[in-house]
Image (cartoon, rainbow, N blue to C red; front, side):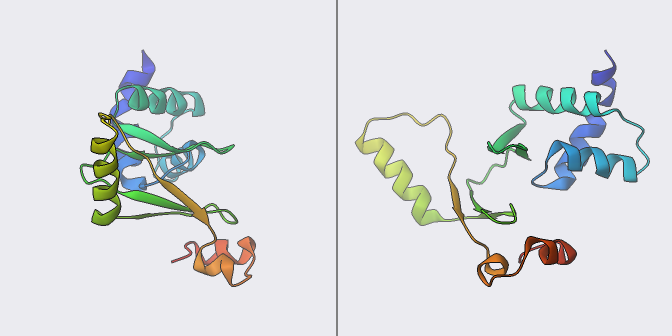
Length: 137
């Protein structure tokens, strides 16, 4: 199948992309001279998802993915501009694991996405101006 031929390329670009939407991944690959179809990228992303190499971190209209990392981390998503920031917290991790022990739950996965407004959007700047700066950080 043609998707299998492209899977290593899609995987490589997805790793470099960090948090990514499929459309952004397609654009990144094409800008870098990779002549790949939209359907092939979608099929490859689904294969990576099914294989457990990537996870979906957003259930919005446009899904956002990232590669599975060894270190547990959490996400903040801006409700205005959609920027996703990740952070690490031993305190949150310890609290979740402690609660799971008390409840006698065997965790198979955990996902925490906090929502609010990033520092840029909370100052009342428009998303259009934010796009010019590329990042809220």
